[in-house]
Each structure stands twice: as structure tokens, then as C-alpha cells.
Amino acid sequence: MRALDIIRQKRRFEMFSEKTKEKVLELNSFFGKYNMHFEDKIKKRFTYYDTPNNDLQKSNIVLYKTQIGNFTELNMATERINTNFKYTVRTNYKHFTKLIKPHDKILKHKEFLIDNFKAMFLSSINFDPEFLMQKLQVAYVIETTSLEYRSANVTGLKITYSFDKDIYTNMFNNQKVNANILTIYQHSAPKTDEDFEDLISKLTRYLKELTPTNDTKIMIARRMTATKAEPMTKEKLEEMKKNLKKKKKK
Image (tube, rainbow, N blue to C red; front, side, top):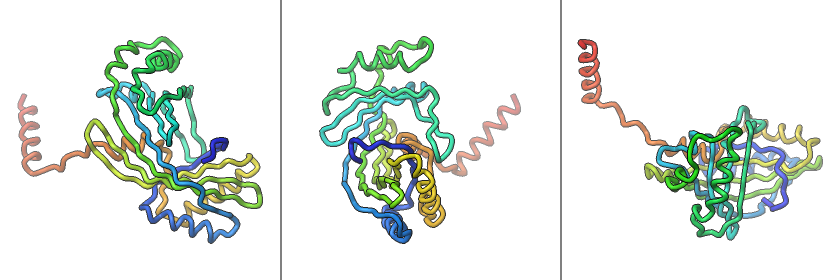
């Protein structure tokens, strides 16, 4: 997206496969009233930090580094909580950013971390930020290749379609998975909301390969890379039954 674009609202979908992109473009063309053109291919990398005990996640905080080309930014924010597909609801939402160099270690920006850890909480914090920082390590890496298309119609509706090919890596359990995500951003004024909702409704109705999601990218990464439970074998089942009998006898 262009640097000066204002995002009024957005919708996110998990795509069945990379081929779903072509079906979205075909459907948009079928609608007839939207003029769409390819705009850019962008590579992005998001590095998320946490402790081995997930202390930041438990405290509703995300700490991550954004890298797009030569642009690198350190971010600390409260976790986003979504209640529906239309709007993102943020409870006491806070987001702090700082431009840094691409290869900077996060502890090089100690003051930024300490000051903003404290600012995250309305009341006094019950942990030592400096002690927590010593335990921080890379928790997740999200590598994204975005194909961006611009769309507009005669009413003034302006949209960016971002077709993302994501690679999620969970650094704690070495799980790595691929995902195809579509995010649609509305840039135009409130008077175009009805057209935006109409477009989203049609895409959802006619293309079942799109699954609406409230999740942010880090939420999707956590879900998709979570360690899967081992299948229950006969031996394990027998062992569980024996342990249960022993407990009952006690």
C-alpha cells in the first residue's frame, strides 16, 4: 500500500490455496463495476519476541520488529481483540513504535522497551521489566510476499487487495507452515461503506474458498504452528485405564 493511505477498515480471509487468488480476481471482474489493477509486489518480515513461558502473550502484549525493504521498525502494542468481522475492537489499545536499523538487537533499545512496558499498564506492573527483557528471544517469524491490487468504482470506493503468501515459523517448537491470506483494506470515506460491505458480502457468498477470520497474523501463526497432540495408541489407552484403576483403589 502507498505510504499515505489511510485504512478505514479491513477484512481478512484465509484462502483455501494460492489458486484462490485467481478466483477472487475473476469474481471481481464478473461484478463489472470495479476497476482493478496490479500495483506492487512487496516482501515483508515480522519477528515476534517473547519469553519461553510466553510472559508477553499472557500479559496481552506483542513485541515485534517489522522489516519492509530498508524500513525497519520496532513495535510494542497491546494484543488486538476482535469481536466481529466488521470492526476491530481495542480495549485500552496502545501501540508504540521506533525506527531502528535492520540488524539492531532489541536490547540495544532498552529505554524504549522499559518505558513502554510500564506504559502498557494502567496501574503499577507486577514484574521487573529489566529481568523480563533478559529472557526475551525470538518466538515467531512471519515471512510474507504480498501481491497488492488496487480497486475503485464510480462511487469513490477505494480498496487494496493484499494477497499474502505467508510462512509462519514457531521458534520454540520448530514448526513451520505456509498459509495464503487475503486482506482487503478500505481507504475511502464513510459514504462508501455500503459499497464496501456489498463487495465483502458478495465475495463471502459466491466464493466458499474464502474463510473470514478475526485473527491477526500472529494469532494465525500461533494457531497453525501449535504442537499437535500425539495420536492415541492402544498402548497409551491401556496405560491410562490402568492408572485410572489405581487412583480409584486409593
